[in-house]
Image (cartoon, rainbow, N blue to C red; front, top):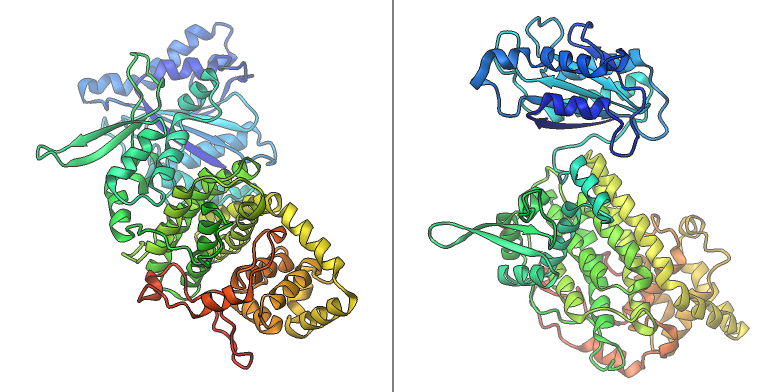
Length: 586
């Protein structure tokens, strides 16, 4: 059950809409299901509805007229309450009970208070009602409506439980503002697929992803076709910013401006400045061998992002809450960067994943001033490298990164669930579902090639690598991942790694130890991409295997950073580990 609260200044105008046909003839059988005294005139049951509507307006506005100029400028309180899709149909008596509970919970008309505000509940559809109240009490004082939306939401959660309705996740006040009904209807009228608020929110998120400075952020916005207006203090310093879409104007012909803080709580200029200061995006150093000249910049940057995304999940499992919350913001930037540079085959799903994950980046756990430079550098590198071609090595490294991001978003969901963040945990799982779909699209060709290569191996070589899998993989992982009949790609990868100079058993143990595998939808696929990444094999198997001497040079190359938290790679990749020592989990 979802409440939606708004304020207005025209009682009659709202009633005309509620009792009218609606914008698309969707209003049917409009009638009252409840009122402040149970005897309010009902235009829906009167043969002369215009006269009755005028009487109802006058009754609701009586106390507003009595206080005159002391009445609130927006004296109309409007709350629509809607059941969830699939819920049973409530009758009029049940809707009356719902309305009474909400006006009591919000302080509009507390039970037993003879001076409560005047209110009515109108029903013109099966799945929702509209509660209309005028904000002057019988004692001619204004009601106390602090946190009325939160109170209405909390009451709806109790109503769901008691009436056997679908129980929605409780909000915590950190969500971005939803588009209003007027904004939705305007989008429909103008043929836009979404409201201006939603389009601008995504544009601002993408502009800040990996931005190095405030100036770069605003430049990216303007290059994306967004109108930008800065608000300055007398000193000349920028205090905030407003954005608008070209051509989006109000009835007076002026641009419809949205302050950044009204798009989302974390998109105000002070919050963006804090993000830029805490995690200044340094030039991204690809964590791959320099001699792979046939790998494009998008492929190099995506490989780099894989390493960094894996490490961010470690903060969620082992770091302090404030530090982990900061990592969520960085993962969100990485998704935004990937969405705006992705090939056409995966663009829609990645954009949907980024939009869903945006909700998971905000909670009441305060993001401490943590070092997020690695994540922001990865996002910056992806944006600067531009779009991938969607085939060959570019497509393979996209699949490699998406496979990792699925597990990262699932880890985010577990982190939120453990702290009771229901909406954020749900958003994380939604993002993971979109990423899985995008992964299947990106991985289809390289995985098909790998399966063919695995089946083409000599029988003796196949048996050797299958024996390695049986010896190293935990049985519960094999069962959970459904790997029994789908190891061809994994066997082919182990064979290529061995030809490139690696010990296949040692490499496999290293891949298993990197992170948990229980949440993987396909354990075999996850291990394939981990092995190809740490062994520096091409992500697209048709590009050939890595030369052993190149692997050796990469393994012995010194790191150019002094702190793991500030590096773009946790350790030199392709390092052959001691088979008698288990590698540490990342």
